[in-house]
Length: 279
Image 1 (cartoon, rainbow, N blue to C red):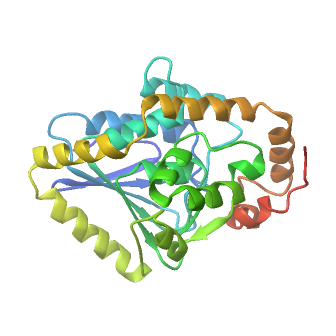
Image 2: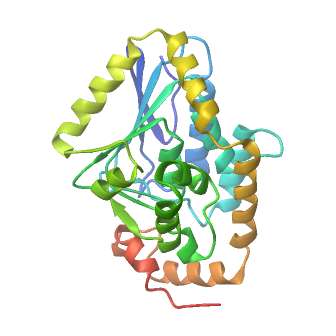
Image 3: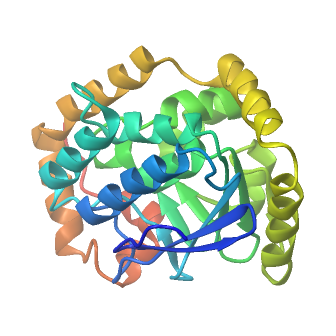
């Protein structure tokens, strides 16, 4: 048996746990999602927990579109409970995800932007539906650098030039381009995605737990950013969030329907490129 969560539906099948985000109307990362993610990470750290976790979304259009910008203080408070004293940031919660003894696999349909993309980047593997997956880091267009891992992970995965393209243009990337750049492991036809990921997870779930944990830890030692780097990015993000350019551009986005189920959220990469220029 696994714990019950408000915004994450879980199902255990042998050594594989399915974790489905279900936070209507569009799966925004708010305090409830962060609270549930922290609880799930606590569960995965216990002896006998699932060896593999597959994350997906109940909403075919939105995986995790971004944070709830109306509840920054609330989700930050929940992050502080999960990241430890002095670490009130999503970046440090996501680092816990990367360091979890479980193998974490993301199955992406729909949109994952901002902190939603950063959640995916913190997972061990990412597989995207070729027809529907969209990734993006729109923060710079709105007025701040990404602050929960994108800079660290994308630079390591994509290389400097492509990471700068992803971060500085704030554009949307479809699954095929994300695969070519290294943002996701593979782009898979939607009809094949469930079976492919299920087979991969079941295969790893049968391997010895200690071997999985040791191998993941060894790769993490080579590839993960340090805690100091994660904290520095979070501090820089918080500095810019309080600035006038971000307040003005966020207000304009809300006027256009941000955080509602409409064209602004569906086409956010294009929309942020048309915001009024500010100094």
